[in-house]
Length: 90
Image (cartoon, rainbow, N blue to C red; front, side, top):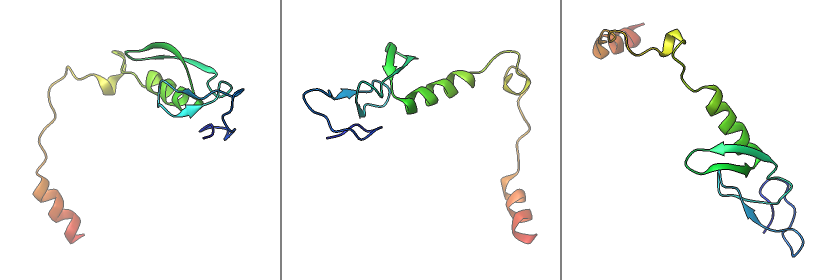
């Protein structure tokens, strides 16, 4: 078996460690980012999980964002059949 990130072979000196974010096998050099994983806590994760968790934290909804405010009145319903007919005939 080898590291999922850098492809180094696991041996007595290079231990197989599972990333708590994705579960893939990584070496200790590739698990160098510390992130707060939901329901787990702050753990070392691989680069892919670090990017994914950072993007997830950046895109968390805030109250001051106008498009994410769901407390306003609901949107008007759309007639799907009419939209479908418009797409077919044009």
